[in-house]
Length: 318
Ligand code: C5P
Image (tube, rainbow, N blue to C red; front, side):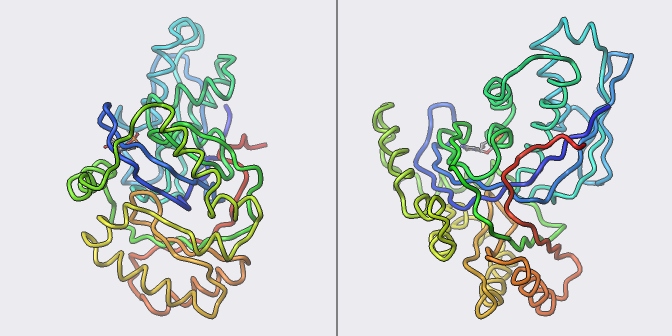
């Protein structure tokens, strides 16, 4: 039996560059792990079954669960190991909100792959785990890298930015509200396709990726310059998610106002939403901002979390 702690992520930057022939979108993102984690416990079974248990009612425990899909992928890729080791039970203790733009499902799948690599002695390197994870979801490779990273391609090409800034976020999400990621990208495409530049060949793509590496945001992350990080937060998906969900737009406004005078550096939606976050330098500032938001929005459906940035996507529990 072994337990992996799987951290959530936020997007400090998400730019949609264009369509891809595979139906996905070409992205340029800056991702950051935050210390809000699910606890994934893998227990070997003698029978060849896969069993998922989760303490959160919105999480499916059937074959549609990403952790379940991770087991199936490993069984398909390593049939001999499965015959040798049998099945596995995966218990998911959920803290990361579901359907939130925080990579909750992706982090659970990544934790499952990492856990099976240990449990079944698969001998996979981190890069091989990233490649396997990419077959299941675009955000999964980042979970193996963790910390602060640039993600390009459909999100699966991940390059670390050397340091993780010492910042803290306030995360806010209406518990009963989820946004479908395919819907967000599809709607963005319908509205903004005409603004896409042709993606071009590999050289053009590499040039664009070089542009993000020398961008103000990435420089600010490398120089550990919090005010500039806060000023350059960006997420193209806000353009479709906020108009479709006025409650989330209102939440962002409330958080932006609460940040003023309390040390908030910037406020932005994460991924395809609907989680909105505010960056702060100090945990006390984040707590004060969270308290102000709670006073202004008395809705019990609103979940608030305060979480520091962390250098890890996944960690084995001692
Ligand atoms: O890769 P993942 O399963 O997380 O993506 C969920 C959905 O989000 C995809 O099916 C696709 O509709 C959309 N997506 C996209 N371009 C990306 C990543 C995701 O269009 N780069």
